[in-house]
Image (cartoon, rainbow, N blue to C red; front, side, top):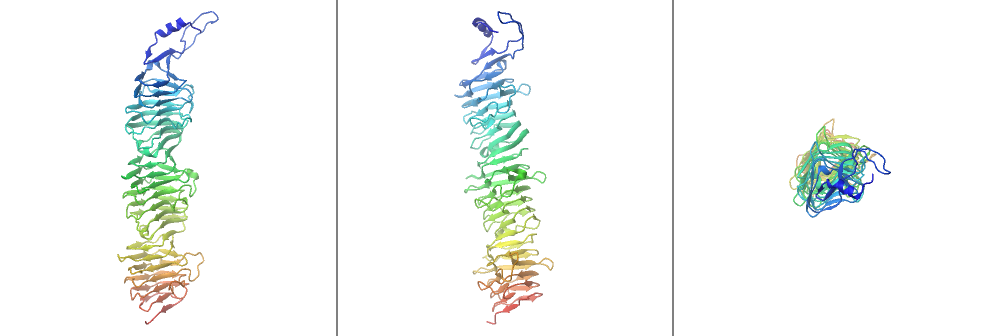
Length: 601
């Protein structure tokens, strides 16, 4: 129906102008009309509404009386410190490529359970991504609040929009989100993209429905999500890899987190990242979780439960393969209290940046890191690797290794913490980095042997004694030995097996021959009481570095006893006794290659 200019004025005279918003009827309402060329008709109108666009630079209220508001030609932005208050029951409808933006000011959108505030599309279907969404920029001011708000059909993937509601605010405590519902998001439902630590004034009862990504959170703001979000029709959350610099808790979400870019934890003042039980983190190729890197102290507390383990895995999830990502790396400034328990680390161990295992510890500290009841599955290298002789776990118990080339890859000071109770499936060996053991230690038998990479020594100013219990198997490469004492430093060895489970010293070769490795060498500094009892020494006696047998006693006096020990396929001799040496005990041994006594001197 065409109406005259005067009729338009009359029609609008009763419509209020509210803070600059002219409310214009867009529907005719019920009624009949006659006029030349017009005919008769009747219909239902939508009621009064206001067009809303442009910058709002003074305080303003959007009223329920003027709802719905149409945003169809330009964005809406709050600037110049203005406060925009939206009354309960208001609906705002946005065309494609438009958003509601808070640049410098406050948004108070506090609906009620009965009268929520709705931000939606001008398209009645409100399809996912049909408009941009709401953005709270870095200068959003305190008091900004969204309560009992629904955001529907937003998250259009344009202009860098990361979510239906994107928050860039840098300062803590400026924003409240309570009873927020996000529906049909084109990108993430809620995106926190600030790059400094951030917390909400209040965060409660947020739900996200039908979105490819529920939460998209920069790691610096990880602690802002203080309670579980409700999800329906959501595939995953996304954690943007960055540095966690303040004490933060990754609260359990019923959605896995895809980790894009590496996640680092640490600061000059030190900080703690706590990961709640049941949390699942999925890492992209080439990424890691690094704790205490760059000289920045940090603590990691990743303690799940038997029924809700914490999972670190590939972004491919069930389809992941060994080496899909780097792993969890603990650096030298890792702090006391770091604990990984009731967790699974899998598909990691990518061979890059010096990483050697699903869990790689680069530290010489003692007792700062505990690992227990944790599964290491499908690792490209070792399940657990340690660089730094001197490091000790506290404790390392009840762990499982599955489908890994090696269970652990560690220096001598760590082996004592690899106690009984570890399990191995589809794992052929552990790796012992050849180095010096300078402290007393007891090693228990494992279901897999130890491959020794490099020669291994026991000596030090603290008079260290290494005790090897039944079932321990050490396998050596060509040109390597096991040396007790030496370099003026004392050391001792007690290899105490049983008749059914001896301590075994042998070659790493699949088809070894006599002389495939050097052997066991006791130096003049060997401590009294050293012994081999119910042990096996085979394929040793390589003729180099003065070694002449499987076991060489180099001026040890009567410090070493050898009893009930079997020698097999050794070169030159089974035992060489230096001229200032005697074999203590020397009963029950099997020496087919013989004993050479060099003396008297």
